[in-house]
Amino acid sequence: MSQQVVGILITHWHLDHIEGASKLLKACSNAKLYLSGALFTREALQIASLYKKDVFAETDKDIREFGEIIQFLHETEDRNRIVPVKTRHTFFDYRETIPTRLIALSPSDVAVTQSISKLAQFAKKPGDQRIRTVVPESENLNAVAVHFSFGSFSALVGSDLEETGNVQTGWSAIFEDNIINELSLSASSLFKVPHHGSETGHHDRIWEDLLIEKPLSMTTPFSRCDLPTPKNIERLKQLSSNLLIARDPRARNRIKRDNMVERELRSIAIARKSINDKMGHIRVRVSDKGAFDISVNQNVVKF
Ligand SMILES: [Zn+2]
Image 1 (tube, helix red, strand yellow):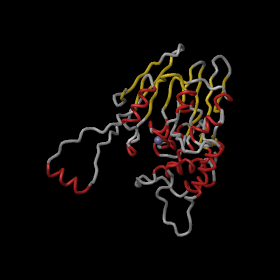
Image 2: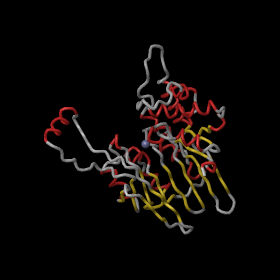
Image 3: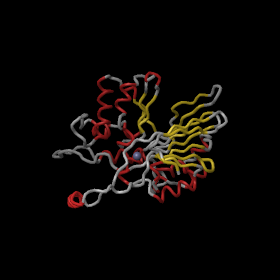
Image 4: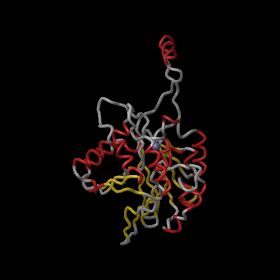
């Protein structure tokens, strides 16, 4: 089975999107590794080379994961497996029987350039000890959103692509660049909502030009940033026929503890919340008439 995998896409360099990728790459020896444009550069590789995977270290996991990938490709002398991706990249385009196509909508050229210069700022300077927050939050600038089509069905997978306030990057760049007409992209009925449902991942024209009215939407929560917020969920519910979230993002009721334990906990932590860390799983099958067959495990919540 693993030998049938032809490609692995790393949309951007954040742990919630990269963890486990090195294992996958090793197991799927026929798969090419598709990387967001700015990552196959001297700047990114230099940072990656700073860390090796260390089972005892919990820090810098995203850098270590990427470093592990680069190390593996270096050892196997298989650099040809890496394919950098930017807007308009065609992963495949089969025209026989049922037309099937996968196309990257981002990052734009400007986003790639900006990402590279941001990564360059993290290059090790003489006297530096170690880099802690090597992967800037702005890495989402570099995220790869894709459009998949199979016959009349299509899906929009938004990755963590965000709006940036610059029309040459983020979702705006897709609309400013007129990619939809140029590549004849059909309106999608299935939508992986970008950036965990956040406001910054929203653009009206995604819903007007890239999606059908009321698509089936889904996303994953991001506990560290409390995403999606109740407001985000409300917006997505209004715009979608159904909204599926891979785990319940709402904080659970506080666990009742002994008073002494409570007092002790309060003295060491200013704010506490329970994090639901159970992994959700959503599977959507589409019939030839376009109907969805959705199956989920018990951690998924429907709105
Ligand atoms: Zn993310």
